[in-house]
Image 1 (tube, protein in one colour):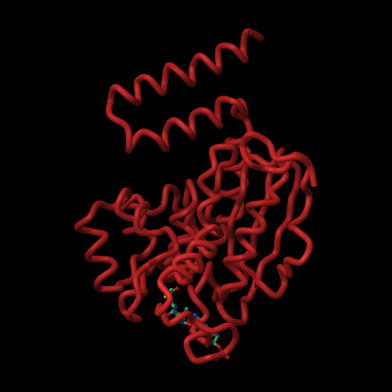
Image 2: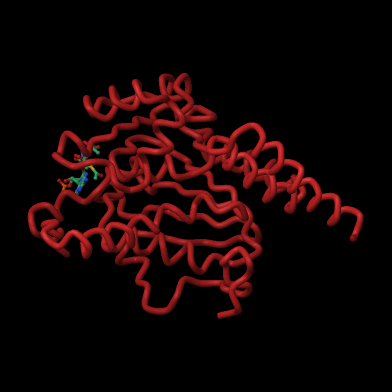
Length: 269
Ligand code: ACO
C-alpha cells in the first residue's frame, strides 16, 4: 500500500485491506476508473447491516484509490437497506455492548461511525442511490452521502427511537441541517416513513426519478460531476461543508483562501 496522501488516502490502493471479508460484511465494492460503487449486498435480508457491514464500509473508506472522485452507494434487490440486522438483538452474531463500560462502548460506536464519516471527505463526491426502504442505519447511510438520488418508491424512516435507541451512525447532524430541528424531531420521535415526494420537498432527496430510471439518473449525475475540474470540485466541496459552521467573515476568508489555491494551480505558481 502506498504512502498516505495529504487527504489521508493511500496513493495506490486498489482493494480493501487484507483481512476484510466484504462478502461476510454484506458488501460489494467495484472501482471503474474514477467511480467506485459500494453495494449493500444482502438482498435476502433486505440489506440489513451488521457490525461487520459498518467495519467493511470503514475499510473501503480507508483504502479508496486516490483517483476515485465519485462514490455511489446502492442496495441490491428490493431496497436500499432495512437498517440494523434485527437478529443481532436476539443474540445472533456479535453481541451488543450493555454500555456498562462507557469508554469501551464509546470507542466501539466510534469505530462503527467511521464507516460513515469518510463519505464527507472533500476529495470525493458521494451519491446515495435509494430505492425502496432506507430504514435506521440505512437512512443514516443515505444522509452521510453528499447527494441523494431517490427512486419514486423510496421510503425513509428513522426507526431507532421506536426500538429504544438513538440514531448514532452520524445521521442526526445532517438530518437537522437538512430538515430543521422541528421536522427532525417529528420524524425521529414518530419513526414515521417519508415517501419519495415528501423526501424531495424536505430536501432529503435532491433528485427523484421513476424506479426504472434510477441507475440512468445516477450515471448522468456521475458524468456531470466528473466533467468538473477535479481541483475545483475538491475545493468547492470543502468550502460548502464549512459554510454552515462559519461566520460570514470566516466564510469569506475561506473563499479567498480556496481561490488563491485555484489561481495558483491554474497559473502554475
Ligand atoms: N434485520 C434482519 N432481517 C431483516 C431485516 C432486518 N432489519 N429486515 C428484513 N429482514 C429479513 C426478514 O426477516 C425476512 O426474512 P425471511 O425471508 O427469513 O422471513 C426478509 O428479510 C424479507 O423481509 P420482509 O419483511 O419479508 O420484506 P418486506 O419487503 O415485506 O418488508 C421491511 C421490508 C419493511 C424492510 C421489513 O422487513 C422491516 O420492517 N424490517 C425491519 C426494519 C427495522 O426495524 N430495522 C431496524 C432499524 S433501526 C437501526 O437501523 C439502528
